[in-house]
Length: 293
Ligand code: SF4
Image 1 (tube, rainbow, N blue to C red):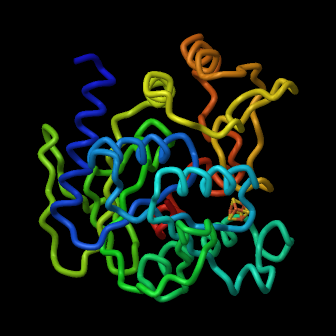
Image 2 (cartoon, rainbow, N blue to C red; image 1 turned 30 degrees about the horizontal axis):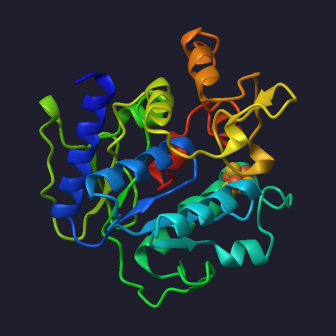
């Protein structure tokens, strides 16, 4: 087995273990490269079928191509595709782009709060009707007790402190200083009733591993990651008012891999184009302790 085979096998094992151990789990799909690799791994783990609902938190500020790509793949792969949102904040325009709140408050509201209330079933969820491709209200409002998330330890500082099976309290809050050890990849999956679990099958993957795997497996990926002719491309995807592309002429996956191997970005954070990281003190720990993905 080469390194990618080992990473794949470990992630598939974690996904199967999560499905076996926890009732009513879902998987977050942000539409980015990491969570799309996670989705691909889930298809491998369960032989082409994904028995876990995919949940997307729609801030209504995502780059439009991301939503088109989400819905295309959801239809093609027959996914149980669900989205949630902070309807009130969006209707009242209580957002950073509307100039009403700062970025941290906006992220807490449109992402963390929306995620918390979508997972708990307190707020409306919308599910794709695979016959029409349209979203309809989801009549199942049962609480998701665990969520699988495609974060990687090398992506930014707070994520490097994560465990593969990470307990959160009922409010989804994260106590970074009180987490179970996972020596030698021995995972603790036995938690007190009511504990909300986050599961991270991609913690050991690097940005380069992700692109090499996308290349090897021929995983469909949004073209936003490639230079469209203006010498820029997105290295990390998010809300358009807060995400800027990087200088790069990489037009395909091979060129991205070559660029990463060249060391061009060795001292530039992967999420350097994400403005909310800077507003959270250069990392995301404050936001992530409060439930941010
Ligand atoms: S990334 Fe920007 S637009 Fe999106 S939720 Fe955060 S502050 Fe609001």
